Length: 287
Image 1 (cartoon, rainbow, N blue to C red):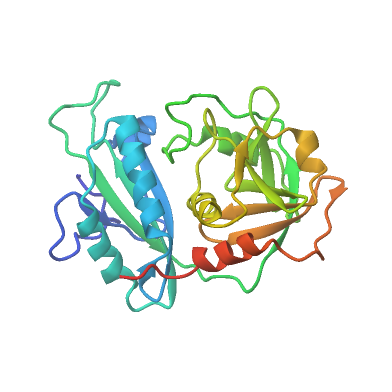
Image 2 (cartoon, helix red, strand yellow; image 1 turned 60 degrees about the vertical axis):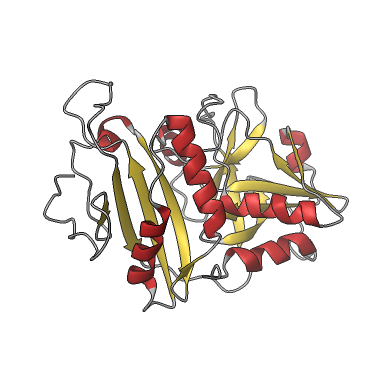
């Protein structure tokens, strides 16, 4: 990758495709990531120098590579870079970009162009306890594409358009629907609803990002006596739930206090499976 001056040199001992970039720096315009959104990214929380939910991040990144026909990154080299960047920090966020490399023009990828990996740390610290969030329903609806659903590709225009719908600083997140009006996700989070002690999260077979905390919840549910149901969720089901939660890699699990004018009981005890997953989501992966 021909770096802009803001891009740091490679970390000592790392393969040539991984670069470290300052928070606030920009990718060069010749990258296919900038031209077409041709690539993937992960936003990783690190605690005590180790990434949280690392296996789930790697699994999603590799799934994205298969879907986009990108080569698999050198995960061991990436782990070494994360260690060098985060070992001196109690907590830190890191964005990991894996792209189709450079292209002068045209949609066709050059068969000789190597992929580009960029690692960008940024300040982050875990919150204390579960946050309570205020949501609004977005009018912009998600595009539907089973091949792109679930992965964290770099084309986020649906989320950009949805997030542009509100300026009220008291609104924390926007609720996004599919083309048929079903509930899918937030602009930067996954949704979990509780009804009569059972947890349900929307199916993401044709739209939305399969978040790592959501995946952890599903996995932990399979090990428990109360598995999480993955299914189609209607607005009525959501608004009549006993409780609604959001999941995100940097916040773990958060309560929903209201969706527009609909209020939820935030005084009720959090579902024990969600409480457990919240702890797991912000705990360093053993290394």
